[in-house]
Length: 192
Image (cartoon, rainbow, N blue to C red; front, side):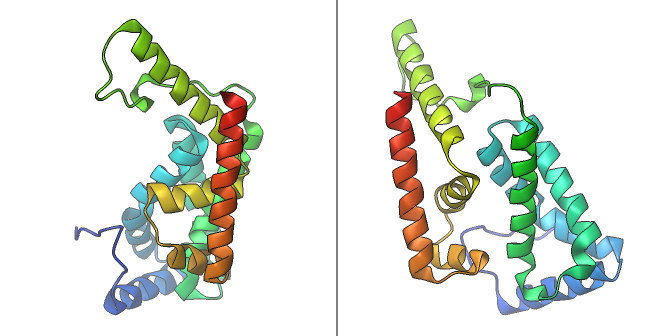
């Protein structure tokens, strides 16, 4: 399987090959769709995990997104916009999971980044409280704000690529990203 770097823009040949896969998958070719899923599964899962905050919900949302994509792919009009469309499908499935969720999100120990933190009880507790505040603040954000922050800061997408995926001008994407950061800042102040 060829490796694909997330930080680089796909080549024209890669986009054409993907276009052919999307066309074939849209006509019911399961093998073509399996190739599309394989090349996008890790990124979709990481996105869902960042938005939802736990792996179980992220697995559910990712699986539901790909099932929905398979069912609705024949209706996709612009093959070149497959990735942006799939991203919207995933975000909608994350939204569905959030609606169904009736429990408070638990912080898993592996979510805490304790590298470089002294293992004294007080410093570990302080790091856990800071992580809890950040998670709670992130949970307060709208899905649109979460999406922007995940795409830009977790996936390191440039603003121009985010604008392309969202179908908005670059200036609008910059403004929305700024608004998302400000919303996170305000939410963090509330949680602390």
